[in-house]
Length: 460
Image 1 (cartoon, rainbow, N blue to C red):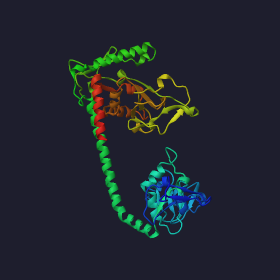
Image 2: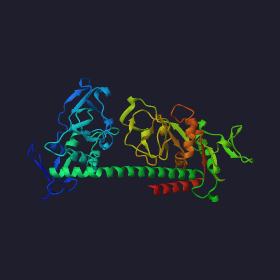
Image 3: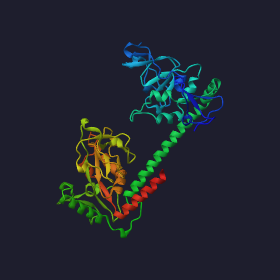
C-alpha cells in the first residue's frame, strides 16, 4: 500500500499516475531524483545505419573484442584494417557505448572519437549536460548488474532487451554533484583496480590450493590412507565375487551381454609381483601397478565392477521441446548436473540408455581434450533422461567410491596415457574398461565416501 512518502510515476501519454514503491531499490538523498534511462537519454532511439562496404576505410570500426571486460578500450582498428562487412551503427565522439550482448561483462565506455560499431553495441547520449561518466559508472554498478542479469534472455549469449534498459531506474544527483562523484571515482579507481588485481590473485591461489587439497584427499582415499582398515569389514575379494555373481544373473536374464563378463583376475604372487589371469593366460603386470594398497583391498579392471554404455545418436529433426532430455558435456559442471542448457528429443530410446539415479555420466568425446573424463554422479533424477553419443554412462553398485576414483589422479593419469596414443579426443569403452582401479571392502567404501564428503564440505 502506498503512502504520502511513496514514489509515484506519471505516464505523460495517458496522464495515469501509479505507485512504484516496489520498483525503488534503495533510498536516495534529498535533491536527487529517480528517473528512467529512456527519459534522460537517447537509448534505443533510431540511430544512423551504414553498410561497412560504404564506409570510409579510415573510419574507426569498433567490435566487442576491442573492449575488455570492465570497459577498457584495448585497440582501435579502421574499417580497412578490419576488412569490415555488414550493417553497422554510426556513433559520435562522446556517445556512451553499451554492449547489450553478455552485459555482465560491463563493456561500457564513452567514445573518444566517432566511428561505426557492431549492432551489438548501442550508442546513446544523455540530454542536457548530464555527466556521461557518471552514467557509465552507474551502468557498471552492482545494482544495474543484478537488475539486468535477472532480465536477460538467451543462455549461451544472453542479451538485454531495449525495454529493460529504457525502463531502468536511474538515481540522478544534481549536476554539480554528478561531476564531483565522477571526480572522486576517478581518484579512487587506481586503488580499486590494484585491490581487484590482488583479490583476483588471492582467489586464484585459494582455488588452486583447494583443488590441490581435493586431489590429495581423493588420492589418499583410493590408496587406502584416508580411513583406517577394519578387519571385521571383510575383504574386497568378497565384494568382487558378489558383483560377478550379480552380473552372471543379469546375463542369464538377458539384461546384460555375455561380453560384459570379465574373466580377469589380478593377484599377487609368492614372488611379490602382480599378475593378471585372463582365461588361460597369466601376465606379469607389476609395472602397471602404480602404488601399494592395504592387504584387504584388491586391484581389478573397471569392467569387473561396472557396466558402461555410449549414448544416443539423434538427428536434428528428432529435437522436440516436449521430448526426453539428452545430457551432453555442457550438462556436467563441477561434478554435478547443470540443466540450464538442455536438448530434448522425441526419438525412441532403449531401456539401457535411460539414466537411473546413482548412474555416473562421463564425457567420453569432445573437441576439447581437457573436458574428456569429466563426470557427474546423478543423485536425483527430476525427470526421465538419456545421454548423447559423445557421453558414456557408468552403472555400478559402488557408485560413491567409483565417482571418487573418476575424479582422482589415478584415473586421469591413465586417461592421459591413452589420450596420447590418438589424435582423437575420446575415451573409448575398451580403453576405459581396461583402466586399473583399487577396490576396498564395501563398509570401508562407505566410510571413505563419508570422509570425502566431510572434508570437501570443510573446503567450501
